[in-house]
Length: 260
Image (cartoon, rainbow, N blue to C red; front, top):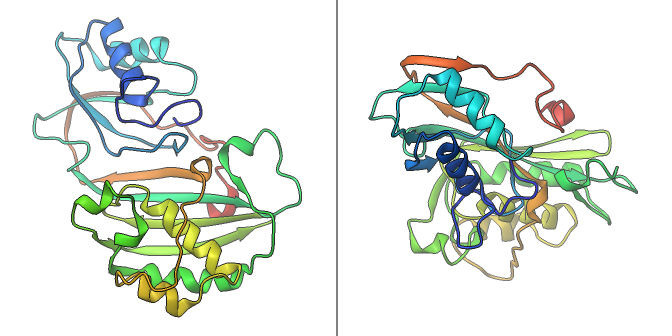
């Protein structure tokens, strides 16, 4: 999910993950009450794995729901598994962790077929310096400078369990793991790391920014197309019925790149 969609959250102009899934549910007469996603991905951001829950209005088997939804959804969205879970399951608040990956292409010319899924960097970039800076994000910090005005309306303290960069040929993959993230936070983190790797931001400036002090640091979010919601994790969830499974690798266009 991602290319061609305006993110997950429903909006007036439509063409979002929420709107497409709600329409598909209506098409199989399953209703769309309380349709809730695990994250509010921005327009152009991809989701390799995404979880949503919904209260269906009419009894359908999980097999019927999965096959019916995939027949109605656009080609860029697919349901791989449907499960009947307890009423207290919540796709957003029950999520215990997420992994995001941001794909940078450092070669001279990005392959056209991959262009919608990465950001081609043109210029000097010290990958080792970027990797060193990535470790500064690990731990609990004030991410008020790494989000938008919408994100700053709530508590901006977040825990990042892991932040690292892996090189694979002409690809550099920034991998971030944590329980929850602010609006546009990972794209801003990636932007700060590129600034550090290109000599435009020092580690001291980055450390100060993580305490909420702007100083001389200017943080820009990297373009949406390079970001992928890679994994969402839940505790043990019992299902009365389920159908489908996650496909064997490769299941995503950039799977296998940079340890992906």
